[in-house]
Image (cartoon, rainbow, N blue to C red; front, side, top):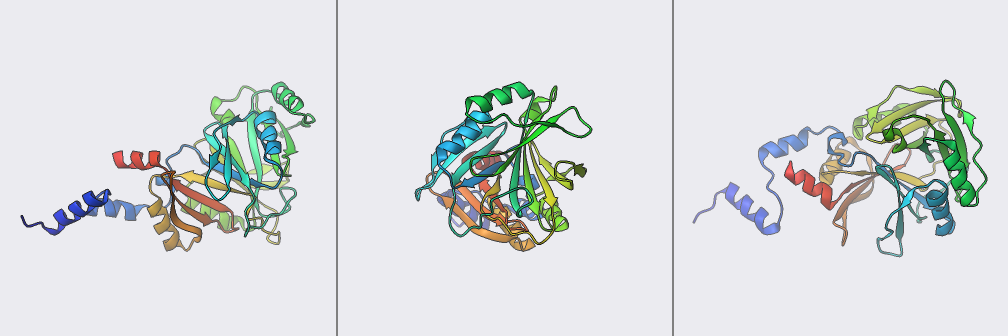
Length: 303
């Protein structure tokens, strides 16, 4: 039996266990202009690298903040990833790694991932959890123009965490995590998160706590907020980053190369986890980590 070029391609794909990319599918991939259509999880995850004892971090994020601790993953090389559920997102805690820059201090002390914000329906339960975990009660102040209260605290590793009390809000808000980035150039960073990552840009607003303008981007129950305190701050490239679960990491790789986005760790596969990843840097070197999981791969195959 003679096989034509199309049949040969199909046979090769079958033997290799991969899908055939038809011309129409190839055109559809080429037409993707941002990562937005490829975002599968209806939220983003955030990871935090720390230097203190893990139990101190667990007591704060699990005990004081009340996040549900999930299974810890051993990803090899002596690296453990402790996972905490925040609504539809996960906060992933892991030890610091070399070849990164860590700048302790406040939100305006460096560029990088400098603030995590969590939302709660009432003040009393938060105060009680802090007391039970052995911490002083957060000092809440009114949020300008709202019925909300806000407190700024620091985790055991010295990272800023904002607690917002929002009474009678939607369940979606209580499932929301806001990731605060301090950036050196707002125009460049806004373009990256809007045009490359493909997040929905929200109307800007004045942030009274930090006396600055805040530009926010939303995907599902995660908000990425940008603030700038000038272009001369040192760069913290290690303390934290953002993870996106996507259906097609190869297209992310192609987009990054076409747009000149810095590739921190090239497309690779984590054996034993059915996980394919690419690590990119935003304009300030903040990690944007795109992961294709077994579940997101299956979802893409069904479409």
